Length: 307
Image (cartoon, rainbow, N blue to C red; front, side, top):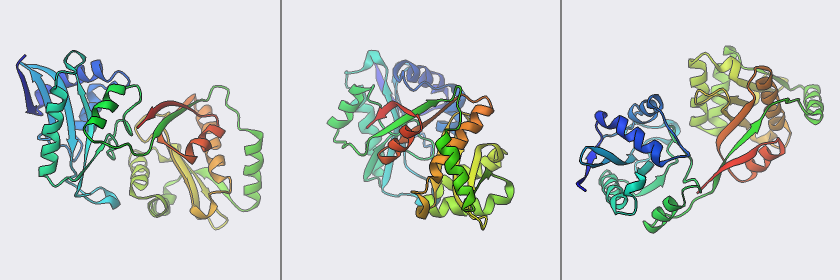
């Protein structure tokens, strides 16, 4: 073997994608998504996107990230960095190449002022919220490097074949309407209020999703609102934040109304709307804790678990 670790070059892309798909079997990627979510990410830095080669063959990749541009209300997060994705071709694993490429990336992040590295959960262009339990060797690898487990996370899904709005939800929606609440699709007249609501209640990332839906002329079809008798937005949910019709979320309700049942009604109305549009499946990538139980009550099941 003649192993080198090089800065990313555009000519490596086909080899990186091939190696990625042979190694990360549960996280396949295609060319256009790689370009969009890796190469064109505003914080992409070729000196942190390290490529391991044996002669001219790509055998590994480690994507380190340090913010170069502020991310909404989070700003630059000056002392934080990420390893967004890392893999070594199966036939080269347990040869020390993984440690070699990782240590080089870690050293370069430290040189840029990073004091804490988070695995995977880089916003906005994350691939997974953590390490999938289906990659036990990866978990062991990073634990030996000194990484400590944060909160667990799950991905969940639900079939919408033959979906019908539950009678209990229909009754709750009717009761809420009697109290002056309205459930309806987003219109552009809601834009300013909706952005302010999402930003103040849930943060800039949620507002960003809504803004992009409006920019893409999709919000009218993908966002459902709940308003009170004064037409003030008190809750909303949306889908398609990654371009997939079936991608659900986020969903949120004003903090003063989070035990009112509005969130459950929004979710059920979204599922009914999807079913009517011929969208027979919903999924999302990341939740944990009490939110899991909320989704389980509405028929969602866990399909992936992460550390």
